[in-house]
Image (cartoon, rainbow, N blue to C red):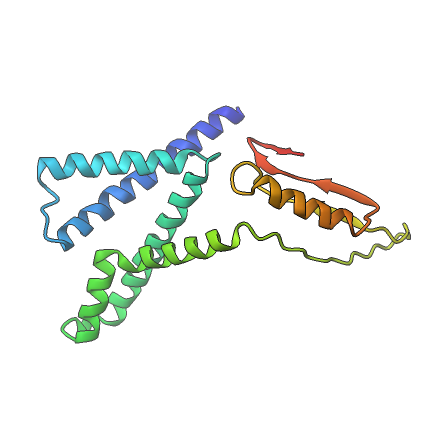
Length: 191
C-alpha cells in the first residue's frame, strides 16, 4: 500500500511540476519574442517539462529539492503578480506597472533570488556549526553531556577532513554520550 501511495505522489508531483513548467516556459518564450505555438517550441517545452518534472519527482536526490524550490519561487511570484494585477488594474499604463510586469514575465526575479540563495548555501555548506542546548526534565536523571553530529552529508558535500575535524572537536569536549547521524535516506537514518 505504501508503494502505491508513493507512486501516486510521485506521479502527482511529476504531473503538476511538468504542467506548470510547460505553461511558464510558454509565457517566457513569448516574452523574449518567440512563438510558443510552433511545433519546434512545443517539442522543446515538452522536453523541458518532462526533464524538470522527472527531476522534481526523484525525491531521494538533491536535484529534486533544487527543482521544487525553484518552482515554488516561481509560484510565489505568480501569486504576487495576481495580487498586484488586482490592485493595479486601473494603473496598467503607469511606468511602475510596466516595469514590474516585464520583470515578472521574463522570470528574472525568482532565478536571481534562487541563485543568490544557492550561492549563500554553497559558501556556508562546508562550515560545521556548534549549537549548545540545555534540556530539563521533570525526572532527575543526572547532569549528562550529549554530543550529536548530524547533517554531515559525508561523501556528498563534506570532505573527510572536515568531518574528522568536527569529530575531534566534539571528542575534546568529553561528552558522556556521542552519536553521529549521517543523513536521512530512503526512509532510514544512516548512523
